Image (spheres, rainbow, N blue to C red):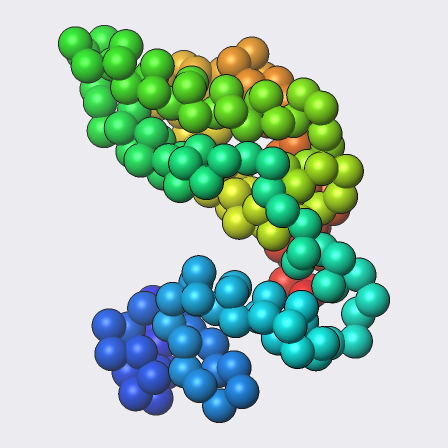
Length: 168
């Protein structure tokens, strides 16, 4: 978002993304965009892809606290200098949150069970950055502390390669 078009300020006063027009309404909050899209598909039957409603309807097996706590736990450890007095506590909090992902992924391939769901799409971008960054900053090896999460990240990276490559 370094070179925004001049008109972008008219639709996003803070010059922030995401922004979406859905049925003529401007929405600037990612969680509201997602709930609106889910409603269009699940409640109003819009969309032509047969699997879309099934994917959007899958409930997360991961608790909302874990999903919502991921960023806070990540910032807690990354903002704590390695070797400092607070590192152990921050690391414990991170491992507790990522351990909840591990627990879900012990019995299923995805956060929503046997198939990809919204929770996977929601968590993937953040967790995909957190795991390697913590290895670089604090030496926390995802493959050792969260092997199921590491496998899930690899699986989703393969499955979503078309979208990440700009082919969506």
